[in-house]
Every structure is written in C-alpha cells, then in structure tokens.
Length: 367
Image 1 (cartoon, one colour):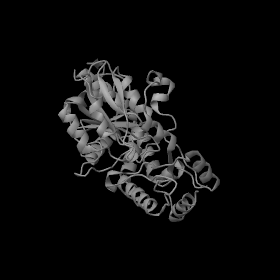
Image 2: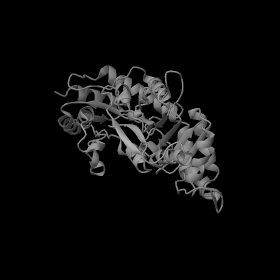
Image 3: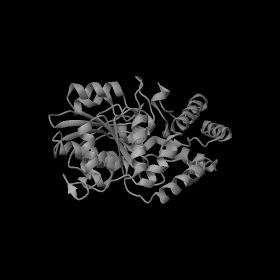
Image 4: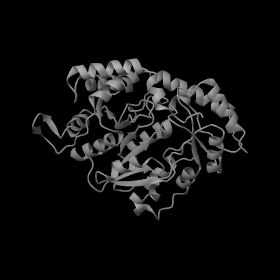
C-alpha cells in the first residue's frame, strides 16, 4: 500500500538532527520562550521576508491573535464583517467568529479552489473591514487582485498561509509577506511540520507585532505586568527547536513536491477527473495534490483496492456543519460541488519514482 503520508518516515529522515535538538533543549533548562523560539522567529521571518515573526501555539491561534490584535488597536470591532472563502477548513472561519467578528462566506473559483475574485465586490458592505485569503492546498490566492481590492475598499488583507509555506508570488514575495499579516500552522502534516502543534504570525507592522507578542503571553510586557487581557498561546521551545531543523529543508522538499506534481500533471490520464489548475508552478507548493471527480467515492475505493491510499479534504463544507448551522439556508453550489468531488492523492517528498509511476498508472486506468 502506498500510504497517503507516513509521518514516522518523514521525521526519520531528520532523526539524528531532531534527537540532537531535543538533547540541546533538555540540557538548556529553559523550556518556555527561550533561545530556540527567538532563533526560529528570526529565521522564519528572514525566510518569509518579513520584519516580524511571532511564534504561537497553533495555526488557529495565529489567526485569532491577528484579529484580536486589530481589535485591541481599534481597527476592528465586534460585529465587523470579514470576507472568507466558503470552501476553506473550518479553522479559518472559527478564527473570525471566535473573536466576535462575522464571517461572510464567499464562493471560490472552481479552477483554483481559492476565493472567487469576481464574487468579492458583491459581498462587500459598509460593515466589511477585512478579507481573509486562504492559500488552499498550497496554491497562493490571486495576490495582485486581492491587494487591489483591499486597497480600493480600505480593507485589511489577512493571509491564512497554513498550507503554503514557501510559495512565491509572481513578483517574488513569499507567502506570509503578501498581506497585512499572515497566520501559519506547523501541524505535523504541513510542508513545514513540527512534532506537535505549533504556529506563527508574520507581519511588517511593528504595532501589530507588539500587541501579538503580548497577547500570546497573558498580555504581559514583563513578569507580573499585564497591559492587556491575553492568552497562553506560546510556541513551545521544543517545537521551535524541531522547526529550526526542518526549515533548512523546506525549499528542497517543496521542489520535490513540484517535480512530482509536474509529473502527475503531464502523465495522468484525466478523462474521468479534473487535475489541479497550475499556471505558475512557483506559486504552488502542493501541500496537497487535489483532483476532482464526479465519481469521487468510487475512485477512492478503486485506488485503495489497487494499493493507493487517498484522503478527502474536506468532506463537509463549513456552512453544512452543525457548528455553523445558521448558514444552513445559504446557497453555495460551487463550494458544495468542490466538497463532493475533491480527492487528495499521495504527494510528498518521500515518494520514490516507482511509487509515483504506480500512482499514475493506477489512477489513469480508472474508468
């Protein structure tokens, strides 16, 4: 069986360095917000090309802290509307509603899976204060168009970059540096994955960064001095040390992903499915290689029976989740079509040429 992803093998590839990182962490005697977090923040901000990186406990916390910080700054207030792609993972929506803002679901572009540019202006009201763009599956949203729209309507532009570590825009900027602020997840399955939960915020806004530094650590500026009401959302020192090891390999791993994706695109017989739309391969890091098929469930069973494990990201759209039943009567046909048809096939740097050839052969023979 070709597994969809084997995290044990992923981390075995760096076993010696990860063990050394753990030993250094253990022997340091400093386990919360120490040297490793600071070094990772500096290295990741340098990688993204931003002035600031704030390490936090998860991707969801990263997004929530961005919105909460803007509330502390008086830029956002309870009840303000945030435009969000309707077909994202639920964390994007939770980050908005959890801090008292109102998510406005916008249909995606069915080709790119990202927020539909042509549908944004119709969704803007006098309560709209921000756009949350999601680089879904590793493909950058339309950077130029979202920047133009956010400037035209004086809206904040926030990135959910949880799946797009290292993707590069047409003008050479990396994900995390194409917005007012960006949220990253380092969940173990990500292109840059920790060995547990972890996340980060990147931004060039000094005032925003300073507030997020406070918010992640009880709202304090020094021990027992608290300027604002904060949280405990700190990046773990151990996870920071692991991320520093794996960051060194991110670009080379992404290039392997692109190479495999290119091979899939050129060799899979797509008569019974729609392959990902790729017009600029550098703007995609293929966190996932997602195809669409009207026979999705049949295709999934067929591939499993022929030794290829797949995964569905995500079977139930947000507006059909019990948690957001107030959206139940909204009509989102493009989002629903995508969620009914998408299937993720294996794509990761550990796949060898025989695995890739076998996947292409099996999927191309599907009738």
